[in-house]
Length: 416
Ligand code: UD1
Image (cartoon, rainbow, N blue to C red):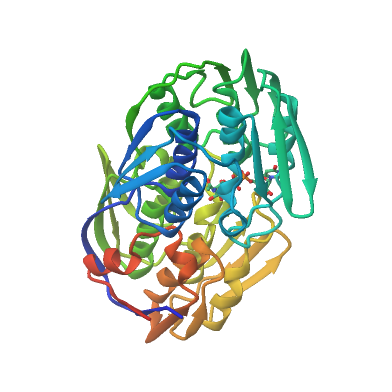
């Protein structure tokens, strides 16, 4: 079992480049399935979830070849429209492959998806929308079997701006007959990236960046090359690391234009932040101030940075509060932080946190991807050594958190 060992109280200093975005890369890889040809994605992060998606595409007959951060997907030949059980269960975003499969093969089989254990994660909105577009979907035990005689454009209103459901509808609509109008769509920047790639492939999508998307179906897709944007959640993680440890650092390619609410919140907590082009600079000379943070869909404070915010409030000054509105069960990391001496009281979807200035190093366990990374951040502000086990969760989304923090002068190492 692999572990990450962090030595606390070592201020961070330096400049690093942020990896490509996981949540953008995965649906972009699924989009490649729509085209009987080649799609080249650049700046793809080298992480477990990307390998898992490559495995899914390869099992269907695509040829995937990776050279560094460039991934070439040749989807000329598809031999099966079934997502393998293991990969489907390992990663929730496997479900967006279903929309692309229906568009390309008029059928698709998937398993109820897994991924991080952060509360119940139903897919009712995905399935209802695909049915509305002409898919017949049977749910048998853990399987979803979808068939269509041809998807057709439809008017769909999502009752909640689900990121995955929005992506599934877009992928299904690109080759459907007629026009799809999607209202109540999620507006996360990763959706703009997906639409950007699809338009570069020849799709016709209007309203990108808004909650109403109009997608006119087409059969004319072509080979393309497209770049994945920098990972705003990884940038937010490393900004939090500097806020916890103290020091100053700069991050290149970290999509600061998509971090408005996060940067405002961090400034409110006492960080000095400056953005120039795609570089985000941060300087932290004090303990984070206790404030009230509520997660919400984009452009609000992202749920994926909620555990980092919890750590900052726990090592901060005064009383803070966190309200989680996106995933109900996303407080598992609080239990681990208690072991480190944090004062956190969970009441339903809220956490009340009393800043203690610092934590104490001890053995803790990563419960999910972002929660695991938050424990690394906590270790940077803990007395002594923090040993984080179950790090496979962290590897799903971070290329090399140890390398990145070492490059900023952090005392952190991986043990296997
Ligand atoms: C994506 C991100 C994840 C992020 C989340 C919210 C990827 C690979 N993952 O996950 O990192 O935390 O957006 O920003 O991009 N819901 C339903 N029914 C559905 C679909 C969703 O009730 O059919 C609920 C979920 O249970 C959850 C909320 O909607 O409470 C948000 O889920 P969603 O936006 O779909 O998140 P994901 O696409 O799974």
